[in-house]
Length: 226
Image (cartoon, rainbow, N blue to C red; front, side, top):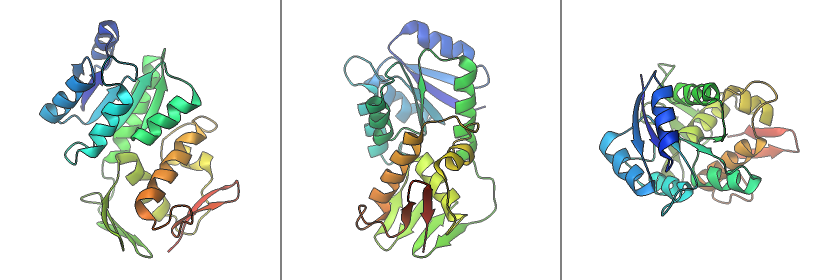
C-alpha cells in the first residue's frame, strides 16, 4: 500500500480519486500551495497532480517539488484536461513522470500509478552500475559524473538505469516506452521519451547539444556510450 497525494481544485475529482484508489492511502490537497505543505508533512510515495488550478498551477507546483531536495524524489503523474502537445511538453519539462488526460478511466490511472511505483522500487541486490565515466548508485539513487554528483527525478533515474544496463545498444523510442514506462506496444507518447532524454542530457552532459554519453541514432532511437 502506497501513500498517494491527490491534488485537484475540484472537490468531486478529489473524492472520486480518494474513493477509487482503495489499494492506497490517499491524502488530498486543493491547490499547489496546499500540495507543497502536505507533501512536506506526509512524504507521499507518489503525487497525482492537476494542472489548471487557481493561484499556483500544477506545472509550477511540480517545478517547486523538483527544486526541493527533500521532495524531488517523489514521482508525479499529471492528471489533467490540458491535452495539447505544448501542455505535455511543459509538464515533462517541469519534471512529470507521466501524464494522463481527463476524462480518464480510473483503471488507466491505477495502471500508471502501479507502473511508476514499480520503477522506483529496488528489484536487484546490485549496488552500482558504471558506463564510462557515469556511475549510478542503486541504493541512494545518485549519479556521479566528472561534473560531480547529480540528483535525478524518479523516471530520469529509471531511464538512465535501463540504458546503462544496455550500453552500446540501440534503444528505439517504442522499446523505452514499453520497458521503462510499462506502456503496451504502440501506446505511449514519444514526446515523453524525448523530453526525459533532453532533461538527462542537461544534467549529465558538459554540452547537451553535442552529447558525449547519450546519443541519438538517426530517427531510430538512442544509445548510451562510455
